[in-house]
Length: 168
Image 1 (cartoon, helix red, strand yellow):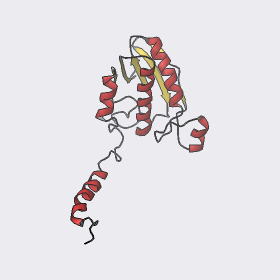
Image 2 (cartoon, rainbow, N blue to C red):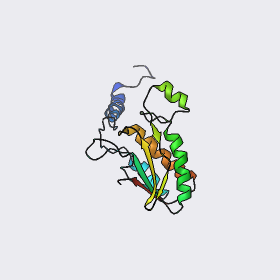
Image 3 (spheres, rainbow, N blue to C red):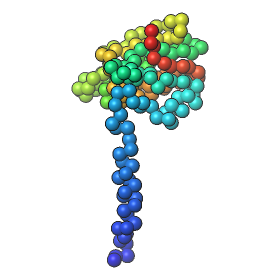
Image 4 (spheres, rainbow, N blue to C red):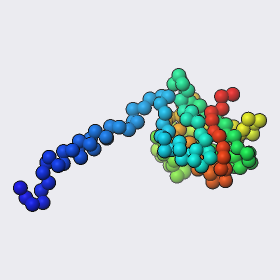
């Protein structure tokens, strides 16, 4: 055996581990499956932003998605500002979860993106935002929406908020 050669028996265990762990993702998650990981959930809650796992997720019966959200925070003006910024970014997100750089890039992708995002609406129970995705928000798109929402709420200086689907 050459001095630099690594015996096959030493390579087999790491190779087996890599191959075994390669299939451990959530690639086959179906409708209604949670897409938010524990670290992501912990990150949003540690910043004082508590986001329901159902935000932009599938209905329990899998027939559609929650397209309306409700954000509750002390400063509704900042929430509205954050949601306006998020709405503009949501329009650039394609069904594969990629936030495109421009509307032209969305068009070139050939993938679905939201039809429109309504203006934020201040209500007695919080600020509502509706994203029209024809009833279904793909899991990758939903995850990107949640990330954008976290980023924009934080950028607006909101340190405490609760975000949940608007069921009303």
